[in-house]
Every structure is written in structure tokens, then in C-alpha cells.
Image (cartoon, rainbow, N blue to C red; front, side, top):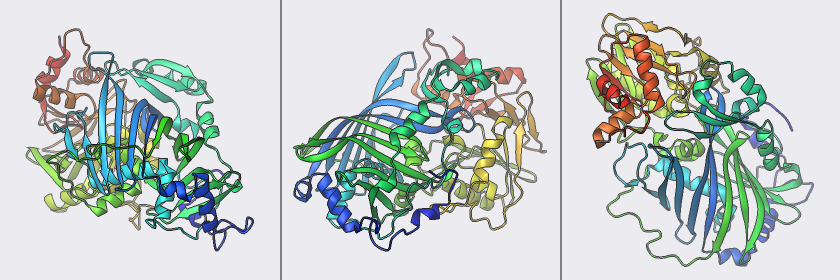
Length: 605
């Protein structure tokens, strides 16, 4: 198999003018008939009006490791039941997941998602405390991303769409066994976080000896590690379980945006054993999605894969272990009934963006990916907190200085970044954005840097993260989504300022000096905070400031027998170590500032 990053355009190389290759003498129409027979036959599939699947789903999140550019997180074993009504195009997804409880131990959380055509609805108790409403409409980008994910996990839906004329065959075949877009290496995927203790922040990791030998010498390692399981073959096992020699299969290519979807059909039994398509990732750009279907089982004459694995850039994204499949179930009228009083409003441009980066959105759903309107809160003269309307997961601080604008925390959404750049130009009479401060590398906080770099901003980040951001800035120009930095015809000189882990860095100004301080903590190696020294305002990023704000709103107090969150303690240790004059604190995940005394009250029994 070829290695390295190969331009997305290779995905569209035509190896034959028609169908699946002249060697087999088959057209795509012939192969479609074979695939239909492999799933049970045309008569059986025509009578397939619905099905439900009970499964356990492991979800994997890239960009949530303890070090910049290293590590994946496994959210293990969500019990998921999915109900499909093929006549109405409705899908209901019920998820019961286990979370670490605030007072120790674990609790269960139920999330119900309903899709009816292009419409989407959500019923959940928001674990972040950002949205108090249990029932709400989905934004169009999240609804489209969710619907696309279910289609990729269920090839029956793709084949039924072809049979019913809802989608069309393409006469283009992809070059087989070619790696397209960014491909993750082992040192980017591992270590694997399989548990993180909420109070202490310490992780249980699957790692290699090589990683542990290096990481164990770092000063923050004892604050981060709970237990290490040495398994150097973990990633290669995933690769082996998802490896398919595509040259041994016939292809069906479905015309689709943002990229064609190709199914690989077995010549032996007509089963679809693999799917490939291309998407966009906020950090790595063009990236291939691959889905493998294994352990097929016949249920009332319809064949279903009982193990489904989705890879993104060759790294794990989903592993679905199906326990039970029911064909043509009798659904109650209430199964697909939307919550009362909830109005869904469709936005097709947002839905298209959802299809372009479905897995980025699915991994960090609250951030969204559409182009938003903005909310602004003026904290002080020329100091603003900006967010996407009506709700957002990441709040961005904007500070005017004499010679330019300092932006603190981009968040994940590049389109939101573009809108903030426009807002700044209009609000501050064209003053340039001089610096973008990023608190740490986790995707929901840091994946949206490129619009600011395109606008000429210098990045201010912890020195351990410089290589991670340099890779993000200098990646190959995208074909799937051309973003603001791709559109810059003459890129400027890359400017990244690395923060020394022992001292502050000052963006000096007569009125609004901004100081950046490193934070020694167990959440990430590269944590920093921003301090408006004249106002005594701290932008605390992920360090539980937003949690304190939610506690104050809800009247929640930490029980005396429950430890305060490690991140709040680390923040206070930094304030004390550097003698920071703190009065107000703002977090990334909430718009409400809190006082320094509120933080102390939370920490102190």
C-alpha cells in the first residue's frame, strides 16, 4: 500500500470509462444487482420498510490527548438503539452513556435524537449546563451530520436510495488502495485515553513503551497519569481489523457531496465489505473516511453486518458491536413524534457544511460548524466576549490595544472565526488582529486558528505546542473545503510565539496589557491563561471557571467530602505562584464571569 499524504484529486482518477473495471467485465449496474442480492435480494429489500438495531458503540475522539498532536480518547460502550422508518425517512437514536459523576463513581445519561427527513430534534439534559432546555431543535449542520453518519454505518440505506432513485450511480471509480488526505501515524493516535477521573484529571492510558519512556520524564506526567497499559500493538490491531485489499472487490460509486461514496462489493458473496469517502477535518484538512462491515448475519432474509468500524484518516472513529437487529418492527405512533412546541428551521448551507465535516461535528457537536450570527458582551471598555448565536460551546475574548486587536481562544469552527474577523474589522475601524492566544490544543478550543492566521495574526501558544500548530497552518490546500487560509494567495510569514513554561509573556499596551501565563496542570501539557492586567480579568480557558459559573447559577455547592476539580486548584496555584491580581474570571465554556473569591469559595471546604 502506498504511504504518505496523497492529494485528494487521486480519489477521482478514472480507472475505467464505465463501471467496475474491464478486468471483470462488469458495469456498476451489474455490481449494484450483485450487492442487492448480497443484502437479501430486490424483493426482500423492497419489502424492508424499517429496522431497529441495538448495539454498543465505542466512539473515538482525536485531539483530546494530554499532549499536543498526540493521543486519542475512547468513549467506551454507549448502549445505542437506532430505529429506522424507511417509508418516512425517519431515524430515532436513543443513547445511554456512562459518565464520571461529580461526587465520584459514575452516572448514566440518556440522549434521544430524532431525524425526520431534513428535520432534527434533540432531547437531553445538557451535561455542560449551557442549555437549560431538555427538548430543542437540532441545528441543520448537526442534523445533516447525524443523518450522514447513520447512512455510512448502514449500507442498506445507501442501496435503498439507489433502488428508489433518491441517489445516482457515478461512472467514476477511485484508484484502489491509495491513501488519500491526512493519514494518522501511531505517534499521533497513541496514547489512548480510556478513562479520565474528573476530580483529579488523571488518565488511564493505553500506550507504547517508547511513549511512556519519553513522557514519564516530563514534569507534568505525575499530575496526568493514573495508570498506563502497555500495548504497542493497539493501533496495528485496529488497522489489521479494518484492512481490505480493495483490488479484490468490485466498486459501486454513488454521486454525493462533498465527495463520492464508494462501496466495495465481494465477488464471492455480494456482501459490501468496505465504504470510502472524503471529508474535511478542522485540524488536518482533507481526510478519508473508511467503514468496514464484518460478521454478517441474516435476519428475516436481510443481511446485516454485526460489527461496523469507521476509521478517519486510518484512525478509529467508531466501533459498533450490534447485539440485536429487528426487521420491519411495528413502531408506536409516538416513536417518531417530535417534541411538542419545538420548531425546526432548516438552513441548507449549514446542512451542506454538516455533510462536509460530519465526523468533526459529531465529535464536538455543541461547537457546530455553520456560519453563525454573533453575540457580544462588553466586559469592559474595548473588551468583549463573543459567541455564536443563540448558543455556543466556546466563548472568545477580544481585546483592543493601541496598535491592534488581541483575540483569545478561537474555538473549533472556522466559519465562526471568519465572522469574528469581520466583526473586529467593522467594530474597530479596520485595526489589524495582531495576536491570537490559544489556551490549549484540544480541538474544541484550538481547531479554528486558520482564519486568524489568514488575517495576519501571530499565534501565542505554549512552547510544547508549536509543532502542532505549525502542522495545522502548513497543511496541503484542501479540495473538500477551501477555508480562509487556503484562499490567501500570498501567505505571510508564519509567526508563532512560544510561552516559556516558567514565566509570563506580555503583550504590552498603554491601556490593555495582556499577559500570558503557563499553567502547570494535569489536563494538558500546553495550558496557558490570559490576564488583562489593568482590569484584573483572567481568561481561564478550560480550568473550571465555567463550572464555577454554572454552580453559582444553579445554587450548587461542592460537598465537603468531594474534592474540588484539579483544574480549579491548578488555576489558583498559578494565580498564587505568579502573584496575579485577579478580580474577575471568564471561562471558555460559559459567558458568565465569576469573581476570584467565587473560585476560592469553591476550592475551600
